[in-house]
Image (cartoon, rainbow, N blue to C red; front, side):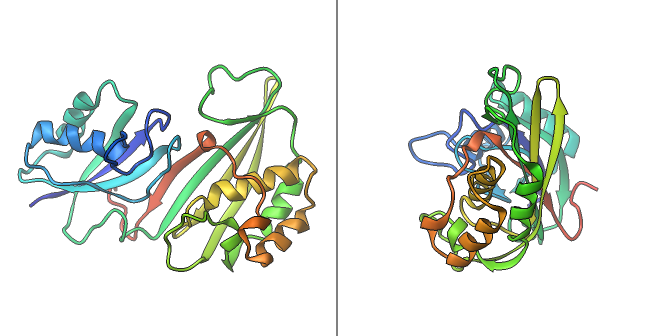
Length: 255
């Protein structure tokens, strides 16, 4: 059966997350139903990451096995037609070999989190950023973030509902970018690792926002990490600022 990799973009607001659920609409279900319009006996799709309710994606990757050999461009065009009017788009598609697995073949995942500091309500970015009223100290946040780089027990920054077997992960990047806008400041958190714990990125950002606001000292992040206690974590950021931006593979499936 021919296997295809799909690069997927979606606005997370209408969905309970990536994963199919019995009583609520997930992104996975919408794409599977679109595929079944093309091949009624189509099986499930497998995604690289299970984003939560309200979380967006600009670079989610999934794979699917089909019975028919498709031209990759025509497959993406047909899927985009059947995905309307849902805020989901197939931005790339490629035939891959049987050994490719969207989740298990991945060697890194990159997330982006966007905070906008602005007094007036956001209009064009509503639902796409976490808005705070006052500017943050980006340098202090970066100093706090630096304590998190490397291999650690991330129990403090792990949801109590996390099903991972171990809280030990290696964080490769957590860089904070400050962008001056007209009447606002945007802070972009660029986060990279092979894999993440449930709510790990949102726990990082919520904690670092407290550093940027002056409520925490940067060294308090280290103390929270060393506590290995969920109660030591700062507030968890809301989901709407988070994006699954990219998934990396030993051989990029889309060239």
